[in-house]
Image 1 (cartoon, rainbow, N blue to C red):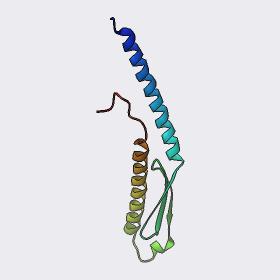
Image 2: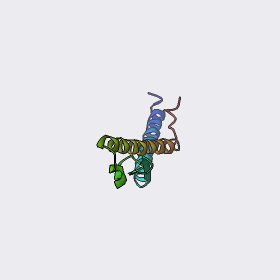
Image 3: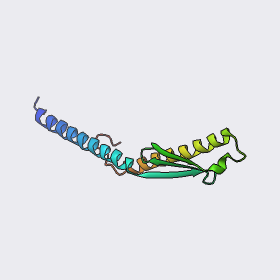
Image 4: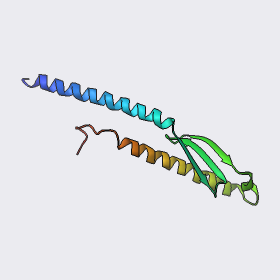
Length: 108
């Protein structure tokens, strides 16, 4: 029981650190939502616009894609462009997360 005050102080510091990290992660999510990622597939025949969280906001298809191509081809192009946008968003998140300090209790 003699070490209780120190333990409580450590617990309070951990709690405050956790709140700070939670606030930073929420801020990061907001920042990522404001970023734009644009990808293309098929030499630009399909363009996808997404935010930094990977949420797709627009898919633009060049009318030339319908000339001599089937629906499967179009589906493949859309899938490729969306997958690339989501991959870039994940890379962006990882890069930003590396900037967030690691709490001492999580290291090692």
